[in-house]
Length: 187
Image (cartoon, rainbow, N blue to C red; front, side, top):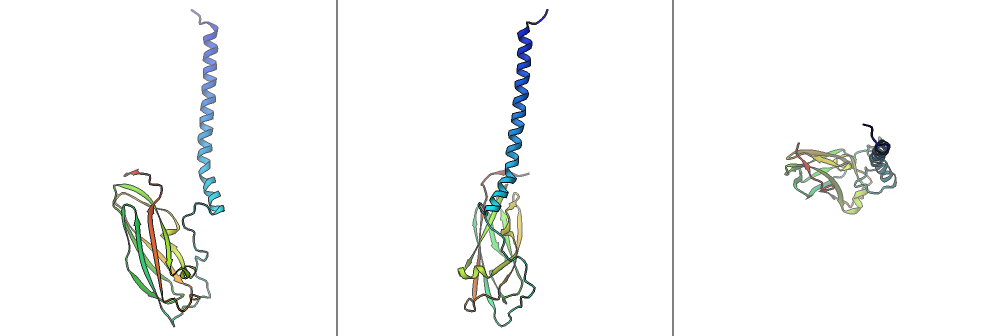
């Protein structure tokens, strides 16, 4: 028994429509996937949506001399805006301007899920921010903390010798907060 001609035409039309829909879906997925790096590049170029930019001077200039005639007290502070413990390993240190120094911050994710987080620095007094030069810092990029993970995160820095002489103490404070708030299951 032969099928009526319209059933064969309907099947061809359905197959053609299905293939067009599959191609359209694949193209939409590819376009959406390609937007992620394009979006990041646009944001980087325009300076939009950047949480922390690297200091303009990330390497110590070759002609910098350590000023042994004075010391500056650097106080360290940590503020946690999320489900973790966050603190510096030392509360303060004495440094000579121009001298390379390092402090370590510890963070412990107290959740049973992974968390993406970012640290934002602030300085007191405000005039010190232009003279506090970070060479390496966990604040330069987003951090991913696995479930119940503990991390030690260094900050390598120096104080520019051009710091005004009346500034004797600088406070470096970080606020560490969750990015996006999306829950990831522990793996």
